[in-house]
Amino acid sequence: QVQLVESGGGLVQAGGSLRLSCAASGSIVSINGMGWYRQAPGKQRELVARFTSGGSTNYADSVKGRFTISRDNAKNTVYLQMNSLKPEDTAVYYCNAIINFGPTGLRSYWGQGTQVTVSS
View: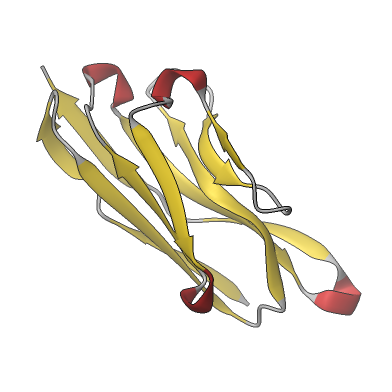
């Protein structure tokens, strides 16, 4: 069993910063990809930023230059530093990880979500 535990959400004024963390635990052989998605009320879940299996990063155009994803492989943890936050960044942020179980293959896991609210 794998768990993704997120932390770091909250309420911040526009222009402020927040740092999200997501730690994966369980019977993990390796992680093929890990990152952050968000879902605002009435909208579909969208990619924010993620590490690919090759180690490169992908960012949504709307967050480029403001958000930075980083990771600590030893801790199976990924971080999202969010700067210059805007009200339109308000959403529930979800961590996602593609876990490699070796012979049994890959499986996608989601965290429980953490609320980020940016006030104007």
